[in-house]
Image (cartoon, rainbow, N blue to C red; front, side, top):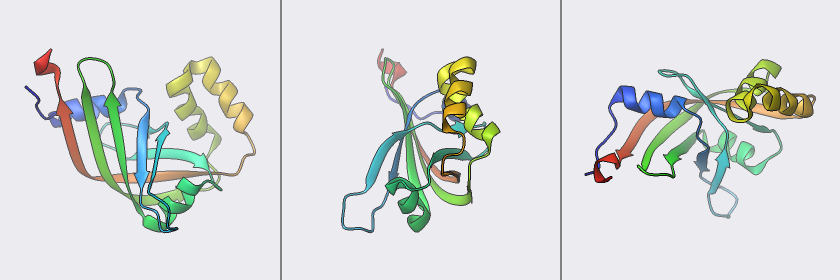
Length: 143
């Protein structure tokens, strides 16, 4: 039977390395953006997403000021956390240590540093998102 995560389980799940899907409303007559992204999260904190400053998702995040971030486990047992949040800060460019920390989360120390080196000097923006509402499901009771 599916159940909701406890707060501690939710915090731990988000802190693990998962690719998130960022969703943000569109104002340009096109459908909303729904795109996979890397993110940074420390339990009890805010979600941080780094992207190129000229991207459509960056422009729409600035315009809308609110986003949905979905993080899921695609293997059994299926689990997910949906965060509806408010963009509470932007930093341009993304500080090197932040860009590297996010890359290391997904690529490991060597790959993360190499990725950060490759992105050095790029026009980037870091969005800080305050979680406002949570939706969680844990289907481990089925398996």
